[in-house]
View (cartoon, rainbow, N blue to C red):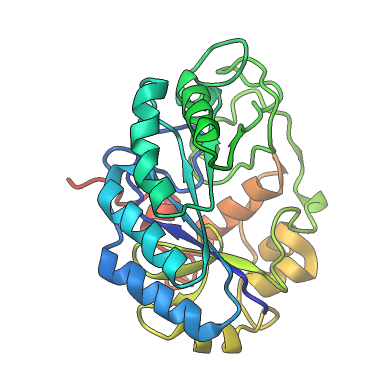
Length: 301
């Protein structure tokens, strides 16, 4: 494994509760990184020696603004490229957005990516939220690299008008919210993972509990319990009880390997994989974790 990127989920908490969210983010979600934990992750990444890129994500990282700014500053001081992914809720006007971004520019933020699509509740024909437009305009005016991205509306959706964008993957909240009207294919045909480089990953996500996610909800260990250097050295994709079957024959093999009950058809490979993993969680609770990635125990109450 040549790990060059770490994506830090600063929090599961978010201003929105989008129907397509992989991590079930919401205003009520539980789990947030402390500055001390971020420093520990940076230290471990530096010890590993191959990590070059750090991304601060969520949830919504701007909800923890002072910690986020400090994380950018200290990450850049350590020599990492540091980017942020945000829904731009803070861009209430272009002038205001400049003020939100100014400390990040001073901290030498490497880049900003803004999520902008209909799942945030926007119905504008341009399929771009006004917040993202204002945030991007402010960033460009300040010389900060900034991009926007959207997720396509699933074919046959009964809830959203058609929208172009990046591929929607049916995992997380999308499985509960977006399947109505979507065409399905026979389960036996999903014989590979089309989205992740599971055999030789170059980036993983780190959540507030310390779990390292090869794909959201499939972990390779916890760096708050075992050093990152050791976790990377010990990674055995074929020996991993979930990754191994996925490499051998995709989500269909995961179902066969463990004799899982299943439907005859699914919306995509992620849909079959996610539902198979839900069934396997009692067997592999430390690998298919944490609860937040499966819509369990999300609220303070």
